[in-house]
Image (cartoon, rainbow, N blue to C red; front, side, top):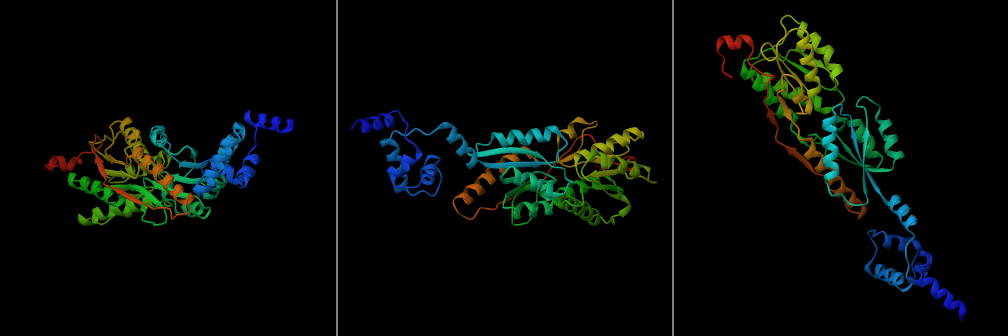
Amino acid sequence: MTAKADSGAALVRGQATISDVARHAGVSTMTVSRVLNKAPRVSPATRDSVERAIRDLNYVPNQAAKALSASRNMRKVAFLFDIPNAAVLGEMVSAGFAESIQPDVQLLFIKTNAGDDPLRALATIKDLDIRGVILSPPLCDDVRLRLILKESGARVVGIGCGDPDPAFSTIGIDDTRAVYELTSYMLKLGHRRIGLIAGHPRHQSSARRRAGYEAALLDHGIQPDPALQWEGDYTYGSAFGIAEQALALDPPPTAIFASNDDMAAAVLGVARGRGVAVPRALTVCGFDDSEVARMVTPQLTTIRQPVDAMAGWAVRQLTDELDAQARGEEAPVRKVLLDPIIIYRGSDAPPPRARKSGVAQ
């Protein structure tokens, strides 16, 4: 009798264990844990039985154990980025954390160099037990990286990406159309020797942007000249030497389109060092509308990619996919393609001869 009274007092003080609850409800301790952590796929009858046992026994979960359980059940989502501009990264970070993601989703930001072996990124993903990955540009266009991540079981969403691959969700702009429109604009200004600094050859965005550039030239009766096309890797350093080569040509190009703003900024730096006035003697245009486009002098005419809005969408989309996966459903793959927007600033003008001959802008 006394033993029973003591046992009852212990339960009143909340000293029952999860095993006590499991025995009382006639289920396993794993099932009790799933109910406590509000996990899916627990039948209403089982959930009611466990909750009733918790009330009957005055069970109070051990907070340390609960925290450990929550940590184990946490779904980790990673932004992989190779963005040298801190402002662009800041936009992604603020947009990512501004999203009201579920409390069991942890957001991580991981620096990954675009030129690195994708297996290095995979090792990091596995070590951190990451379930979903958001690839920012230009990483989202690295086909090998995407395949390796997908084969590992991670869900992948690309931002700043117009890739038609139906295997992963993307949001971006039509790179080909965007560069076609910007190159056409330079042609209408009167430029005929327009140079191209392409991006990293491993990234499909580079090929799409080159295609837009060449299509615009052909539509205006100009055969693309390989001597006016160079291959960079989306970094300032890669474009610096290219710009030196381009401006040393005889005759030099009167306009240069660089496949991102960092490379366009390098062209501006070389032009300034060689005494080439921009835009009076040389038009320079970029891509992304990153903060560097507004920091340089003159400010860059460029193509806008709303990275902040894309990052917010990517977090929501990846959370939806992970939720569907947890329910045992087919994860929804979505493709969003935004209209390109050209931002006209101070780095473009008609070439000198066109101005003298009165070519309309």
